[in-house]
Length: 320
Ligand code: AHR
Image (cartoon, rainbow, N blue to C red):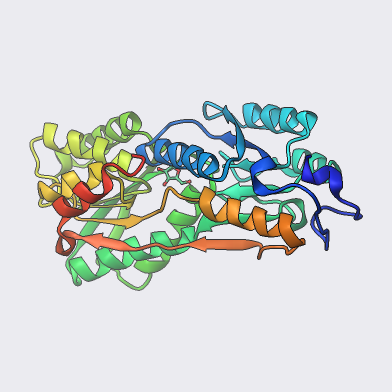
């Protein structure tokens, strides 16, 4: 029995108590962005594993980076009468209508890893990191590491209009405020991919005297940093030494780069957003208890001091 069908309340998000079905009876639709990064691929794997562990029927839809595909997927999940919808929103705006349709159908929506610019009543909860804080942690690391020395920074932004691109930029800029030795001289999107990260870094290097005017790279994710590291090496410079590299995600490949001395620091983003989301859903299903609007995951900074080779060995099997 679909638990939504057992609801007897005005809105899905206010004081509903479910009866009948257990977590194992649930069908959850998951609209994933695509597979632009190692982190994204890991999130998909972990979500499928978490669903299987709980006996949940997961309907998976890959949007191939397109919001229109995500909206179509959400409408299809609504038409199928799923018990809940998970969505990792590719961009922050443009969700009100379809989220309203899910709400009208009494289907709770949980946002995974990215936030939206929409009324909070349109979704049940968001399982995300503090995206501004992540940028802030990366910025503080650079402030401490450069210790007042002049440093031109280049920035590889994530997907334009996505919440991590907006917030990680903001948090980084906040950390640099009042530290006039640090200047962001170039900032452009690399769309969270390795290929674009390399391509854009090549253009930064060309524009900045073959890279000689660049002291640090801040990338909104590790994949873009890995692409950029390749570009730096091809330009005849040493990533990690000539150009400091700090990024976000903490995927195994960046620890390999750190172990080789080619990257300096990364901020961890867990790929397990689905575990807390399924737990919140199960609690809601059991007694109608609404989760908080934000379930925050941790953001840990890793540096060379954290034995990157060991971290790589420990992480490489975990869904990446
Ligand atoms: O929303 C999380 C971001 O999306 C990850 O940092 C990045 O790798 C991914 O593509």
